[in-house]
Length: 198
Image (cartoon, rainbow, N blue to C red; front, side):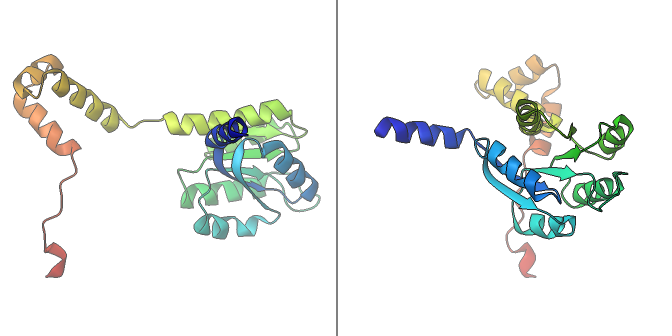
């Protein structure tokens, strides 16, 4: 019993956050829910793209899986591109993966140029779909800013030199003053007390 609880806890810890799936076909939404329930902590679905921005304003969404077409008989992908741009404008940090029924490379390229993280064609391969979604989220979490890399490198160098800034600056190949300036620029300065009370 305890072992099962540990396994369940570990499995839950290894799940990704929340996915929002937007498709007008309820059968696809149901199939996606079954497929992704072992991968995501929370699966949200919408049949109408008009509700995307409102939902994302109210909920924390880690990734969006967005269909390209919502109007019956229209297969241009323009609706998907419109909503992709709207999501990217409001939530630039949230990756969007496009879902299209047609293996139209030019449409996929348009989507990628508009900021989509990837695309999946229907009918999809279950393993490939899960792998692509995981890859997109893993890449998101691995992206580190240059400032963060520099800050960590400086911190490690100073630690290695036991706080001796002159020695750390020599190891980094910069002057002590430059190191001091970098430390100041990488460390957020506290706002002066009482500044907002005037």
